[in-house]
Image 1 (cartoon, rainbow, N blue to C red):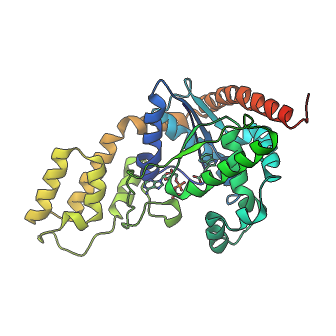
Image 2 (spheres, helix red, strand yellow):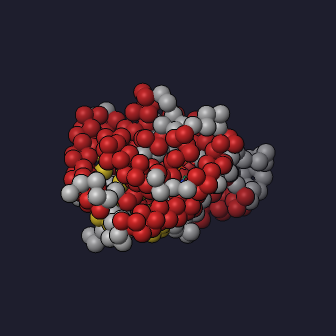
Image 3 (cartoon, protein in one colour):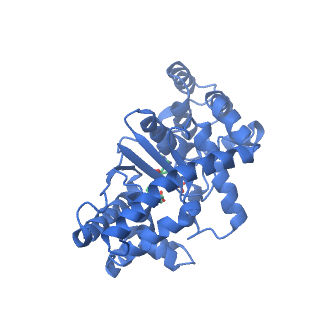
Length: 325
Ligand code: ADP
Ligand code: TRP
């Protein structure tokens, strides 16, 4: 199966991204029957982030995180959308001409963003059309995404269907969304969904001291060290349960229920287990961030491989449209 997914470069990847998206996608990519396309959607990111230096830093951090978490860039396709912008935006234009205005105007993510953001630009409006192009440019069959992307995938299929009715059913491949309802929502340090936009995230790639500072900010109730505590209502315990092993989790549960064990102790334990469980990922991430030319080379190799596919799809489409012989 041809699997494809894109990640915006709107910040550094956090624990929620890693457990909710990166690890499951890497697992899928390890199946020898699959061919995985993983790209950094930096053109999409431009709809909300204009600072080029920041965008590039985020792009490298995201690329480093995927490699650090075990994505095999040599077996798969790993690239920046902006480096293949010619192909992505060419297909986007063709699809634009098949996109009914109300489809974009009524899209939930556009409505959401236009209420929240000060900068409501045309890129934000046509965002789903670029996403449809990203997907169909590589004949992707399966697109693993979060629930919030369901509508974008429906739009992709609608646009692909309309295009195929005009130019022939074998012009574009219509993708299926793969939305894993079982993936749990990782809570942030305040107990709400961990998210960059809520600024409640844990960046597991911080150095140990900085990571401890973040872990110390996890919100708890006001119980004292002596008090008996309810593990099931505590954010430190919830986060700990996502990373520690079952014996450790049971021990912490017992400590909470016995009293005489403070949230400070639990936070130190959470920090220790994060450092231990992500040891290899943290080391590799640091390595790549200190060896940007190596990261650049991996991306450029991926871009050369992806270009071969993008180019042949565009050639096929242009012929179907009678733009070329
Ligand atoms: P953020 O909310 O931090 O901006 P994104 O929307 O960029 O994160 O999400 C990137 C990917 O990570 C998506 O596939 C999303 O489903 C997943 N993800 C983000 N936050 C969480 C979370 N708290 N729990 C589980 N998965 C998450
Ligand atoms: N819109 C997606 C998100 O915010 C990112 C994205 C861009 C994407 N192009 C894509 C995801 C193509 C899957 C396929 O998460």
